[in-house]
Image (cartoon, rainbow, N blue to C red; front, side, top):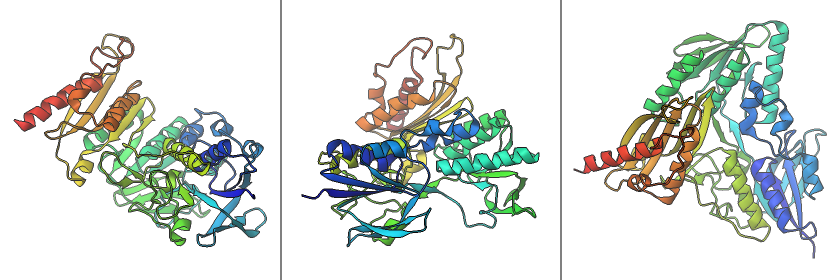
Length: 463
């Protein structure tokens, strides 16, 4: 009997995790695996790109978990610099373009994995395609940015960087530019940076960024990019003023790369991502799976799908898909929306719902915010930490937690993530047996202090 053929579109976290897991379960005699990747790299950490740009990670290759050659040694036919340009669902085949030779050809499949990832949001504004304007979604993007920065240095130009957007990518790239000696301005169209937080917590991030020497301009929507005679960026114009720039980094966020799937008639959700079942199978298609940044996932707290581009999810998706393709079994139940980031020594974390998220799904809630330290107050190195907690009115069910603080603060959000997944109330949280020693925590961990205060808020609202 001839081997089945699995075709994988996309050679990063989800795609190659799926291919590798399927190969572990089925050998080449039973399953032929063909993977297409349009870029130069596979299986790398896109989340590490800001730290490579900043110099904290010395070498690009440090971000690569597995090379194309290593995948091929595992009997995966990985075709680099090859882009899938058409998907024929009915005919079970894909058309691929070899970017090096220009040749196009069709490849049949029995099973298909779509792992096309996400692309940086690049508004359709004048000058957005100018030299010196960079997105940072792939290693190729990161290399292009570094090449641009090196050119600036060799030309003796001023060193002024404008970061457009103040979400995770924006604040991380602001730090990277600051560490490289640039004068940094962050243009944010929102009320405060880090729109994944409530505005009161975002204000703490703004204050900290100002203290680091990063100029953050809120309420500034970019209208165009201005260029010089050489076609290179010189200024960024907004409805709040114009800002000089020798390099522009887009940190507006990403959107699912699903144009190929849309054209093939596959189902997409309200956020533009492919819709799958719990096994990561594309809805309505028995032999097509999708995972990573191109899909929408179920928010276990809000009860609807959302798009979250994170390597942690992509790798889990790939494991689930590979298990199912390879004859095993796996599911991905959903997420609670946990994320951490930092700008210099300031750590930022969130999980669950913000206030506006709770309102959007019809939940009534109470909030509590506390200030503490990440270590015992008397222990050397103790620094401030703010925790905001949101709980459902009457029931006290935990809905979300946000944390802003210094070293040792952000990963505390994992306690809240577990509590959210388990459906715990804030009162139940107050009894959690968390680790304690003065170098790591006050006697009452800040998360538990926040839970206690939120319990009081729930009781007060019900009286």
